[in-house]
Image (cartoon, rainbow, N blue to C red; front, side):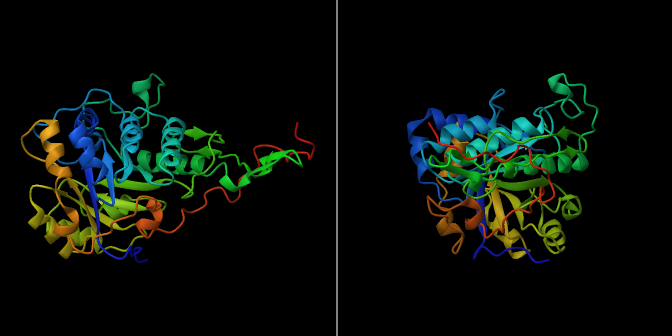
Length: 335
């Protein structure tokens, strides 16, 4: 299967939690953020097991979804939240990210990785005291992805009628049970309807040339992390798959980044590396003129749905055979 074609290379960027916090605290950096022309920006890249950012500390326990919500107020690029199957159960993760997608009017996503590199527990969700014994890795992460996507799809947005004459505000029979039974169990439905783009864009983050073998078929895009070389990119991008492959690269070495595109990557995820305070490294990233460095790159409009900007198809419906969560409403006069 060939990957979708957005019309040009997708040039995305990434900020650590500390860098995102620094942007929020500095009005000059907030101004640069509002004019940043990346296809999207991943927030909390330090939560994923890629190349370390040597001199940029983690920003405590600031959650990337909270940072994304705060930064979205200032405009700027679409925001993608980095997360792993470490702390949050799928329901909590699905609720926060779908809320963000409504706030941004369909300009957000979720990038899932297998392991938080900050020394967290080795078992999924046991850090929350839930006693889960699922080993972290691609299988648990893929199961989390299926659970989250099912929850996102459980309440169709067009089921909301708001018909005062008939008294039917929601066609409740169209809200579906999730019934996911895997590493985790979810019954659903989620308490939030689907968003303008249907569901947030679902990304998969991993390392190594065999990343395609681990990427679930429901993923919208794949990020090949760990600052890969040309050979790794060529091997990964050359394998058939539904999701386009973006290669992680350093914003300090744009010549090498361009070589990864020539090696077959469908796009880039540019992150900071090297010395500097979070404010300094964030400024370095946000001041890079991506449209000049990468002519023809995808530059979404401020109101373009992220899924449309990336040329992605609608997500696969995981609940086509699901049972209704509620009975059909009875017509009556709304008072």
